[in-house]
Image 1 (cartoon, rainbow, N blue to C red):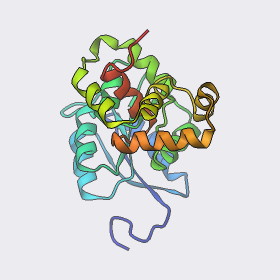
Image 2 (image 1 turned 45 degrees about the vertical axis):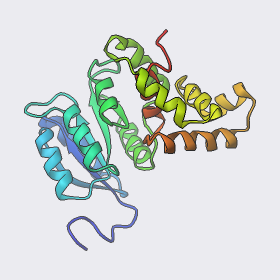
Image 3 (image 1 turned 30 degrees about the vertical axis):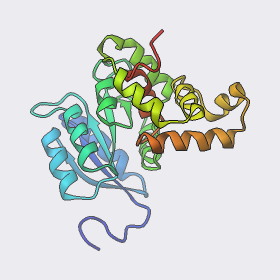
Length: 228
């Protein structure tokens, strides 16, 4: 077995990055308490995060947003570009933190509150590793609306998206932006849940999006959906 865990089977390799030692300690204990999670390492800022991600195979990074030297947003952006298979969960103090949306835009698959219960953190790690966003899209939508003034115009990107997607797929992207589940969307537009799931998969694949959370971000960021 090498240092990057070859032969660890279904182990999820987790990196903890936070400038507060007490928070790192709490997260470390959460990770180490689970038989299917392996702690790869710990860092105190974005530079540490990048060094560790480049040195080891990391599946999920628990990333504090506000840190000295290099913050979590910039580190997340670089990780998303260099290590597309590594998922990032941004850590924030409250759910409408003005820094949370930039973290999602940078490539985070969601964010967690620092006072989240241990079982919720562990569940979030597993969910992100499975390729899903852990923040409810409805929460993401509410966050985006809260910071709507910071969302740039994206007319050119919107036109490109319309060109890329079929009419049904474009409709599905707009439905995703509501934050509703596949079942709720299926009932509203009178399709089977399986059909909705298939269309959602096509949308994410064509637009090269990691998960539904990223779809919500894109829909608002390009102006395809406007805040209320």
